[in-house]
Length: 91
Image (cartoon, rainbow, N blue to C red; front, side, top):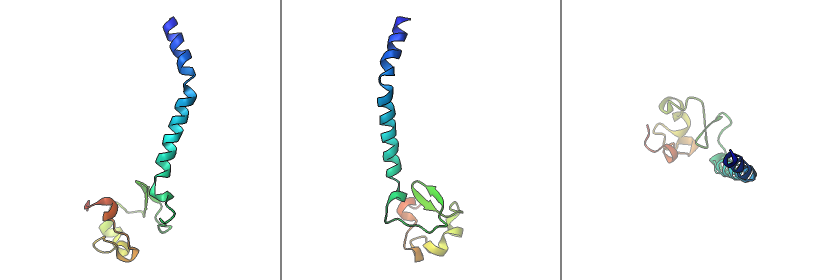
């Protein structure tokens, strides 16, 4: 019984440190998203965040929904942004 009490007392002093580390890790994860880049400005209809990049609805079917801006080959089109920069040759 004494061992459990001593462990709880020792852990109690480390709780603030663990919470601080967790907050720091979350801060770095959030700040590393592409959406935090000031040069990244997708159109307002791109409201779905996927891996830190904003997408338009219908992103699951890019050959139907993304070709009007990203080109029939999804290599950039009028948007000038290739889908393959992030997705590779997924499609």
